[in-house]
Image (cartoon, rainbow, N blue to C red; front, side, top):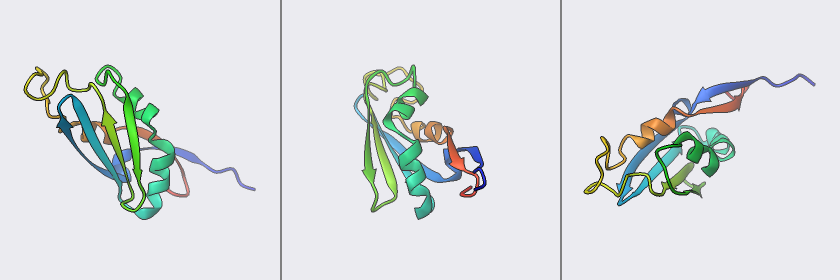
Length: 114
């Protein structure tokens, strides 16, 4: 049996994303571009990986919700906006750029599926 080649890819190659705020919480929707990419997102983009990706920015927990009928994952990043839009001095107090930041995350995929 041939050894499978594993390669790194950025999420932007297989997914779309949107984000926004709810007070001090950032909501990120991550949507697979193709149905066959959804299982890769489920396997590779865990709450722990997202928390690590936003280290120093997200001070609270990260929750993940699976939406298989939409081919999507939804993440809630708690304590990620220094209090929220009306209180924060951040350049992005509504969390609109968090989706772009998440799409830069590298994941490992099977070279055959790339």
